[in-house]
Length: 123
Image 1 (cartoon, rainbow, N blue to C red):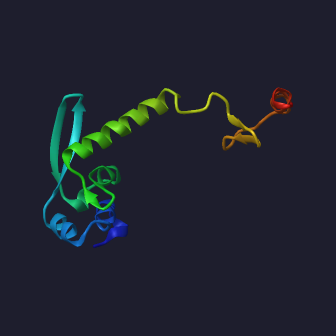
Image 2 (image 1 turned 90 degrees about the horizontal axis):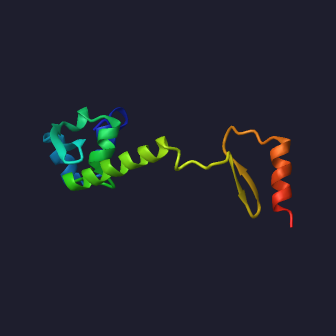
């Protein structure tokens, strides 16, 4: 197998040998969500899987069943929705902890902001 050159092979190499042999010869069943109650399945050769398809179909050394793929796809869709709405991001470009301030990467804390934070957290 050429694992480095192909995402499907890279994921498949973590599977047991019998699964590797099986899915090198037969396609993987891939679930597509077209809507809440509308799904389609595709038979895809391992060497033709994209990186995202490989992550969907083969995880933790196993080729996932369709129900497991659906759970994965719904979880990923929920994550993307929350990130798009900004609900996973902090309201400020920093987090104040008991032991100090942790700024987000690439954020400049101005002197005014730092002075306000010090005033708020000085006992």
